Amino acid sequence: MLGANKLSAKTGQMPAAKNKPPFKFSRVFLQLFLVIGSFVMAYPLLYMVLASFSTQKIYAQSTWVPIPDSFYTNNYSRFFSAAGNEVGTWIINTMIRVGWYIIVPGTVAVLAGYVFARLHFRGRDTVFIVLLSSMMVPPIVFLIPTYIMMARTPLAGGNNITGQGGHGFVNEWPALLLPGLVNAFYIFFMRQSYQSIPGDFEEAARVDGASTAQVIVRIYLPMLKAALTVLVIFQFVAIWNDYLWPLIAVSGNRGIYPVALGFQKLIQFYTQTNSATSYPAAFTLSVLATIPPIVLFLFLQRYFIQGVQGFGLKG
Image 1: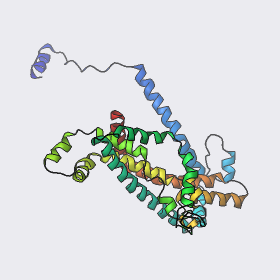
Image 2: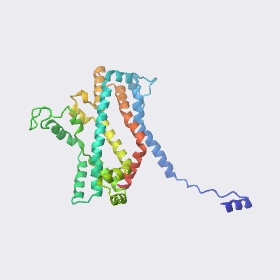
Image 3: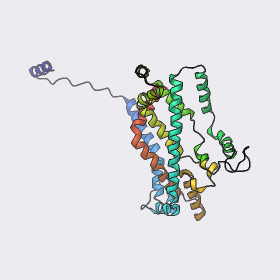
Image 4: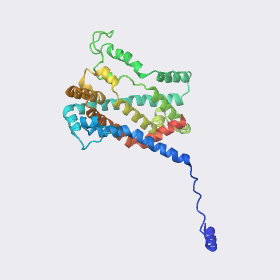
């Protein structure tokens, strides 16, 4: 660099500038496409927020976007006055389910993922293929069989030893906590995450006398932080938005409603009150229900992106 500077001083010429990357029209087109796609993706969210601050009249007169002449907050105040203390109960019920379905299926996925990724035994690949094949069946197919299992559980809810005579676990907490404790996708996801980690770490820990539990807890779990974050976000969103199964299993017990089911009942209440669907009120409930998943993602987005990228590269 010193020689080049001296040479430039002698010749009186400026040092040669670094070569800039050539202009590519494809890059501009790609960026333009991403910007347009971002607006398209953000449009429903913007529409929902603006509609929640609109009156029914303004919403009916709107075309592409409901633009309120003033922020009409009565939809929100009406929500809290109509729901009362039930909203807090619904949120607590939902958070209980979220914690349960993060801890139990998450633990199963971590352990089963280790088994399929690191242990070698006869029939391992066959069992794993059978597990993956369960993902090919639409979840709605399991609704009726699962409901029958909950309703015919022996010695539960007034049932006799044969599962007859009572309601079983229907309209009870077990109906919200027992189904779906083994998630095939999470097991597959954790298996792929384990395989993205070199086996040298486990071999070194084994040489030092570490047990299998110590290897999983002290070696793998810190390395799987990003993958576990993806699991937490997926499970939180799935349980927070779960509506169909609670509607079928516990719609007769208002005290254990989750958020999705409780908000839907409020929309029905608004409809019965107004003799028509109040779309601004419905969008208000949608905004309130969307806030927690968005906040969670904003806090964990760095780990989420790392986990998805690592899974995609390995898969």
